[in-house]
Length: 81
Image (tube, rainbow, N blue to C red; front, side, top):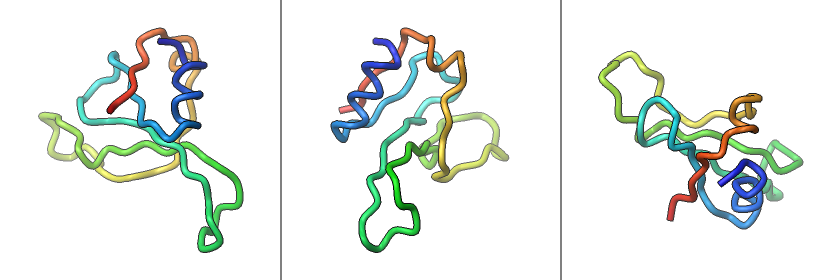
């Protein structure tokens, strides 16, 4: 699926990833801030805590994410159930 469909899925509370991303176990989600959040508007973040890689130095965590042009034009987006 394309990025537009992935964005709609994120807005619906789904998790998404690209089949072509290096490293498995990576996905993105959308956060809608609540009254306890420091953020005031929805944002997308990437989760790499379950990253499967041969590189022991690869960072694992949760950070804000911005789509690259390659990500926005890709047609290999998937919803994670």
